[in-house]
Image 1 (tube, rainbow, N blue to C red):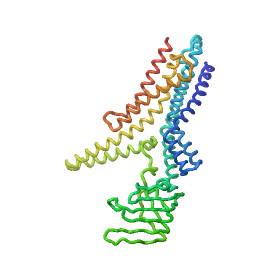
Image 2 (cartoon, helix red, strand yellow; image 1 turned 30 degrees about the horizontal axis):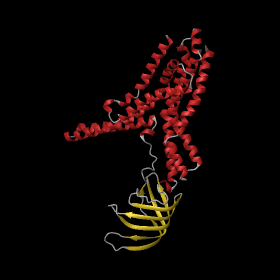
Image 3 (cartoon, rainbow, N blue to C red; image 1 turned 60 degrees about the vertical axis):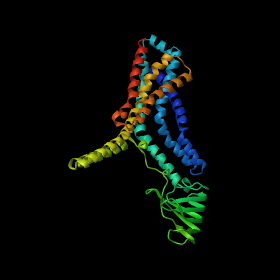
Image 4 (cartoon, rainbow, N blue to C red; image 1 turned 180 degrees about the vertical axis):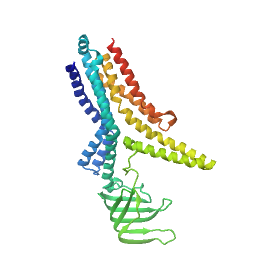
Length: 388
């Protein structure tokens, strides 16, 4: 029995390694790859940064690739065993299907524990490090938000143009200062300019050298002035240059701390409302109702990380009987069944995320539905096939 278990486990592990690599490669061919290649082509990052960015993305996509890989490998191995009559031979020797499934289910539990660590800690941290890496790569170059030979209108209070950009240095700089109504006020032109970034305060300042300016201030006569060096007032960085972690990129403990802080604010507001006037209590109830809607997305993310970690167990339980019933050894059949099951599983997550602003519907509990459904159906199918 021990030899048979190791035989099955070895085949599943070999297939698991292959399928996980395939799914990791496919999942990497998404928006993140496009983002990295765009920065590489524009010269904003080098190959070393690209390699580091890909390494940081691996844990993030591994969360999805590991359960799908286990499901696919289970379908392939047990489908081949069923087609070659190996399962029939094992049952003729008095070995039940439940006993044959034990090493695969155990592997599913191990994958679930590994997925929990990746999903709840490693993947969010790597994702945040990935965003920080891209932010630093962008912040190290003015071209991150000032492309060459393009008029930039997103900077508050300015319209900026640079003939060439290298690092934080610009050549052939043209700048328009705008008034409060967004109209062009002053015109500046310089041979070169330098961007100084302040990431902590999300601001940047521009210093122009060897240029001249046309001043058209309200109430004053228009005038021309040349300058050797001129520093313009700081302006806010564009929103796309950001390293602040979002709820989607927080670890489980960070989400838990954030949720606790939101709940403490709600409790503080409730205590204040007890001693206030009727109007104040009414206002605070409105604030609490609005703030409670903000709790649910955090709670949904926490339950997503925990529930999705259990996907490997349900996939293993469902994959074994479906592979035996399909009775086919073709790889295409195994991949097709895996894709269908994954689509069904993820549909519950998509539905839960679409309802995250509806706390009265408890979308965070909906995230556990596919796990219970897959484990229940998988156990029932396994019992049916075993009793046949």
